[in-house]
Length: 89
Image (cartoon, rainbow, N blue to C red; front, side):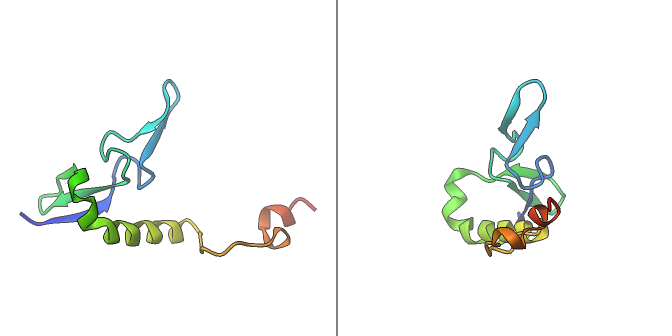
């Protein structure tokens, strides 16, 4: 059976969900990892802890991609370069 690693469909890669009643908690689908295995039939399952070493590089690559999609560049901006601070002047 062939598996690929995909962003968790429940938490969208965050690894946690925020519930109004219970607060923030690890995602039940991925166990807090943010990613799941998906088989050729589209069935997702959590990545077992025993596989983490083998898939660590792929998880890091996927997480860097997700953060770039959110606008994170990995570069710190000086306060006067931050849009939120410029809009408060």
